[in-house]
Image (cartoon, rainbow, N blue to C red; front, side):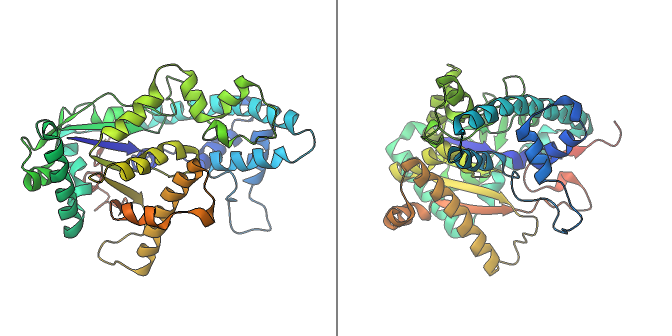
Amino acid sequence: MKITYVIGNGFDIHLGLASKYTDFYEWLKTNPKKYQNNNLIEEILLTHQETSDTHFGYSHKWSDFEQDLLEDLVSISNQEHADDKAKERIECLEEMSILLNEYLQESVDALVPTLAFDSELAFKSFENPLKELPSQLLTQTNTLLTNEFKEHSAKKMTAEINFINFNYTPLLELYIKGLKFVSNETLYAINNINNSNIEVSKNILYPNGNLTDTSELGIGTEADVPETLNLTRNEIDFISKEAHALRRKDGRVSAIHRRIVESDILITYGFSLGKSDALYIHTIVSDLINNKNKTAIFVMFDQNYNKRFKTLRYYQEESVVKEKIFDAYYHMQKVDLPEKNDELRNSINDRIIVLFDNGKILDKDTKTYQYFPFEIKDSV
C-alpha cells in the first residue's frame, strides 16, 4: 500500500517561514540594489505600494504570482510590439527567479535554528487526515482499500509513504529526517494490514525544483503560452514550468505522474490548487476516474475553522476547493465551462474529500498542532 503526500506552500508557512509572494515583495522593497531596470519587479512593487487613498492594503494582483503572470502575458499578447514586451518580461522573470531563491535561502537559514523536529512527536502526525474523516467516509475508504487489496493482494504486504513537494525549501526533508516509519493505526485497525507502521521514503520529488536545483517560476504548460506570441524554443521552455522540468532530462515529470498513479491514498497539505500546477492536478483527477478504489484527501488551511461548527460557510468552502480541482482538470482538457461533464464530476465527487486545518495551537505550544507538530527552541 502506498500513501502519497503532496506538500504545498502551506506547509512552510505552517512551520513559520515567510514564504508568501507578498513576503518576498517586502524583501525586494528593502533591497533595491539587487535589481535595476526590471520592469516586472517594478510593476509588482508599485502595485503593492500602499497609498494614502486606500485602506485595503495590498492589491490582490500579483499575490498569486504565477496565475497573474499568465494573465499578464495574455494581456501583452494583445498589445503592440507584443513579442518584444514578452521577451523582456521573460528576462525580468529570470532575474526575479534568482532573487526569490536568494530570499528563500536567507529566510530558511534564519528560521531553521529556531526549530526542533522531534521524530517521536511527528511519528503519528501522518495518520491525522484519516483520523479526521467522518465515520462514513472512513468506512468508504476502508471499503475501497479492501477492494483494491482483493484485486492486488501484494499491496497488503508492505506499506510506504511518499512525498511530492511543490516547495523550493528543505523544510520537509528536515521534518522527516529522523523518521524511518510513521504510524497509521487507523488503517491497521480497519484493514488489518500486516504492520501499523508505514515506511517513510526519503526520495522526495520536487516538481518545481528546489534551492539547490534552481527554483522555477513560470506558468503551467507550453499550451498556456499565448499562441500569438512569437517566442523561441528556449524562452518557451524557460517560462513553462512543465517544459522547464522536462528540459532537465532527469525524468522528474514522469516520476511524479507515476507516484500519483501508484498511490492508493493521496493526501495534499497546503497545496494552493492553482492553474500553474494544473498538469499534476489533472493527473490526480484522471487517476480517480481510472481507479475506482482510490481516495484523494485535500487538507486546506482556514484560520477560522472550528470543527465543532459545520456552518454553511464550510460547505461553501468545500465546494470552492472542489471547483478549483475540477477547473484545473478541465483547463488541461481544454474544455470550456458549458461543456463540463457533471456525470464525470459526480462519479468521483465522494472520493475527493476536503478537510480543514486552522493551524491553531494550545497555549502557544506548537507541539499541539494537529498536523505536523514541532518544537520551537527556547534559545537560539
